[in-house]
Image (cartoon, rainbow over all chains, first blue to last red):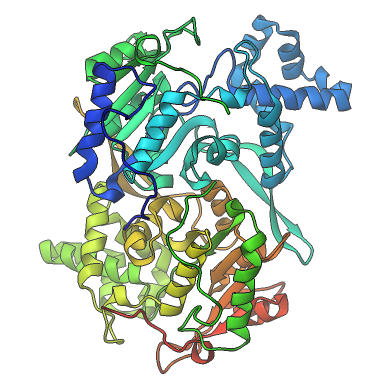
Length: 315
Length: 315
């Protein structure tokens, strides 16, 4: 039913070379081997993006992109900087930023790109990623993907998995680079959606332009579960995430018939990357998402302990 | 960037064997050949389903399915037949059906399947398709796909196209059969979406159940354009449809840079299939969609003239 794949399946000894031997790698390899009996159409893997497939610190890559868009807009017209949201952002005044709220600032930044076509947006995102550098890691932003995750994606494809991305980020932004960075086609990316407006061109049929209106909820938490079902049409048997926003997706993937695996990446490596925790809301309190994962029996990846190499090999 | 394909590209003489030689087949072959210079990521084709990939007369296949669900429900509990919508439907009283409206009846039928999981729905749809016969054509419903369209899909895949379905029908229903009938994965099907409810299972994480609430508009007209962009993330360079509901998608695909083709199937063959017209609303009046197509320069396929064979070869 699925297309035949051209990649060979690796033997266990050469699998996932950037993953250090140990219980984490063993759990992943065992899962991979167990899926040989799963119907191909049910071999579905969903990866979060920010903090799971690539670095999200000190800022989301998408925020770096939007700041770059803002700087260009201000260079073209300095009055753009006078808006309340942008003035706070450009001054770096954390109190003012907190008072306005990151959601409102994010939508104001998104508004800078309202009115352009999806294709022009795609080219702008790609041009930014082609040149932008990470502020501290000494590599380009596009090279801040994680080599062990790229190897896992390749291994899943070799086993006829459909590999999908479920991101809290903007769908269009991730789609602009998903094929190039991860080999994931746009239709396999589920994210936070913006609405388009239909613009009629005389004798030219409809065209679409971006708006600054969200379509539905941000793709986090329970919305990740319903959006994966409505947009991809299948329940994953493997989910990989790193934050509280992935909790529902991980629980959904982990529970059900047959081989299933939920993987949580713990950022505990401030030498090679960053060390930080994501807090998950529980009944009446907050606790680290890693504690939720341990209790649920998910596979927790320690970046410091389990990865021999963190970032993508660049050529 | 795209996966390599295993199908060979046919030479022009053996291409599309169920299409009779003539201007229609020539237009399609010319388009296929012209796309060799298009970037693979932009090789996107969107097909309508009902009346384009399979027969939609005398009823939509999905309506046959829902009527089957209704008959089962009535057999289990005869009181189900007493509801206003179902009483009208089961009596065949066209006046009563018209007064209630097909939308309300359709949602009442959909309500019969509310509360079940997506996986159970998928199995019910597949079980129905595995056994149901077309009422007049002397073949199973699942064999009422069009052989020339299957050949076109295969030819597009051989040329590294992403082949997608944009249907006015229910997304879940079409996804249940799209891989088997057309080789199209669920995430490449865009249709009319139902909302899911998240149900918490104790210690088992979230599960999803179907509702009887539409998520957004029915996937017809301009919604087909915006939904293709938001859900698939790419603008097609080939669109194939048959009705007024496909008009916006066809116009959108036809206009733009590079090789583009809009194909409209005209059901003009009451010997082998059915002969009927779809009316498109224009400025102040209605006209056959074929007239819109001729004016726009789209490629109109006459089923009677252009197809040597109509239905799928069954094995």
